Length: 159
Image 1 (cartoon, rainbow, N blue to C red):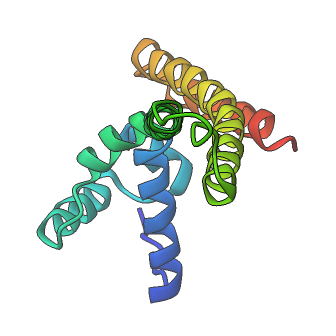
Image 2: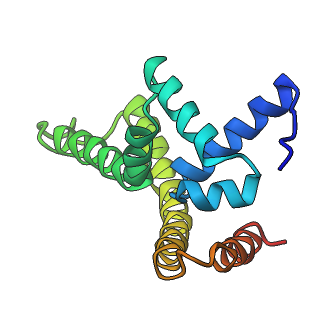
């Protein structure tokens, strides 16, 4: 079996793709290897070297699960705190001033944007869960998971 030699730039792009498939798409190393042509051994080596350099792929994977839902909770908490502070003031100062109204408007826009992100995030999560299921169920048939991943990617990208 011959092994393809990549330029440094090609290798960096492959590593970034592998990282994304592992962290954001939660694919296992076997399926990533099937998709990218990078050996499982190389993927493990990249993970190990990145831990030594300060980037833990598994921790990044856990953090990716928090996603926009965590941001939404934090933004809504800021919005609520600001409104509570404004409402607690004596009349006529219990209405937002221009600066506060601008901040509330921006927080509201952020919340609306995050709602869209969460909808997309939920789609991704359902797809990832399905891929996890397929990887477990068809462990000895990685082409099944690869085919599902290809179709799911087309669905998510609209291609």
